[in-house]
Length: 362
Image (cartoon, rainbow, N blue to C red):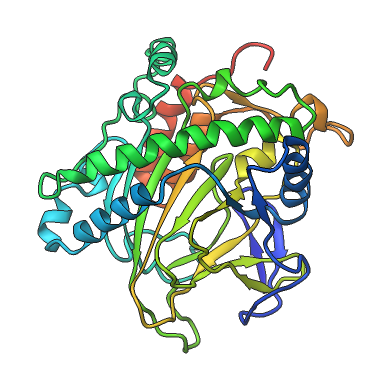
């Protein structure tokens, strides 16, 4: 079986059976309290060979994590009518509630068997607020969902905004720490990405996966096989329900079970593109056949949306593989193609491309 990601990379899937280990043996665990040189060495291996890794001692309090999952469970337990009041199609940011089977992640399969609530970056959710506001002013000429779209918060569950904002602020701090480590891995100055991360192109999502059947010729997936859009994802898996599966280089699905006190981090297509494929963006999917409810919370991290993504100078030994593209336009195309009908997508694409143009010399 063949799989081609949105970024155009092709992979061979030899079997749908899930194995505990494979050609990269296991998903690495990286302790962030180790000496920096040791962390960078471990990240270099994980980012170039696997594309996935766990992090421990990340600094985010467990009580904050537990609280946001508890609040999210309460939201998903609301009547459908109340959740539909904040459906993503009622706003301009492609954020809000997504019902069961609203989205096709893998267009060759059935729609995704999950429901989700998503949000996007706003400075009031960021403890780095002062610098973030400065960057926002610089981008005010871009009047579209990337800068002017508003998050939708449920009136029926007002604590969602408070608890998600508190959690998200901690994750953004962790993300800025990780991007500095990635810079060192890529042989760049440690602060290379700092300016681009002041007002990050970051979206978060909390998901609810019901149990699903394990058998059948075409079983529904919680999320179909895909690679992530942005630079990297910081994922918290709630509880102890194993469902995340990662495709190794042999084409075998490897289980990535929850480990309390850790996050799973994976490289996305944008950073793979930016690093000229030095970093590996790895296919993954979710199949919840445990008979229990599963909850997870990924936060997708990218640079300011006006940042031009083109292969880094330290990664050009074999020549540039990709053309430059504004980060915001890249993200929008990936999000919109699975959420808008063809005519609406084309109408908005023309507007987006006219507003997000490359600077001269990019």
